[in-house]
Length: 366
Image: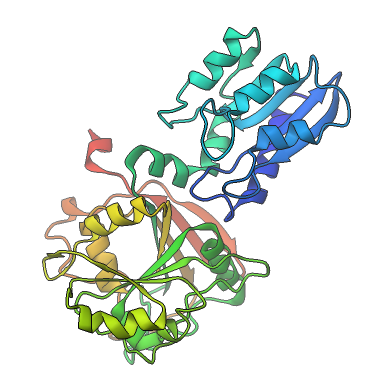
């Protein structure tokens, strides 16, 4: 087998940590000696051993003279676990093949440099694009200190997210909805506006088997989330945070009693300041957010430049009339003022189409 084939195996191992390692990266590792795989491992859960140490511990035979394939540059600092570079050096591994470089300032090339300084051969950037794609959330979070935000919505072919009566269940089919729950497991938090709570009364939980429930964030400038809403009724079971501009402690009391956390933020153009919210979430180690808001929150998020990726599920249906649009607000003045996206990745999910694009910042266009 080739370096590429072994790295592909490491990538598949890394994916097993999806949803459990945040805000750490997903990492997989394979150890080969004399053409045979002698150990495999992946980062299973935040706070537990990293992929390299797990792979070394799983080896049934000697690692002396072996090659380690790992999707991300090994760490070289003490965090919740000891440096992986130490374990690699002590193991007698003589070659390390790396997929992604680690942008964490505590690593950022130092891991590979330490290995080389101990006489270990290091090969970098094998299947780099594939390895990088595993950890877009982590890379963004570690470089900015704010969450990677994915704006998700489902619409009909005529661009409606609800009928003129406000009804939206269901636009897409079961397969697409199942994929959404996989993403609720993948990302650290899910965020909606209070309007969505009032109209749809959603639970915002992950209904995937053995899935992890995200932190539920409600953007509620004037603190009008109904106390009888399901998200409040279940706040003692599922982590729930309300972001508001209302500072009155008496207004907070019933929500706190129900089990919610409350973050008070300044207003910006009549709504909570989403940029401030992202800073607060980053400090709480929320590395990624699935934005499932309505048109108003989506517009505010785009204007605030907090959106990194757009996911659009398109159903082969037509609602017509005055159905709701996925991005409301005033809109741009001229076509040149549009928010530009990368060429979409297109995936068929059941009878529906999923389009995924990254948001292009002005600085990226220069």
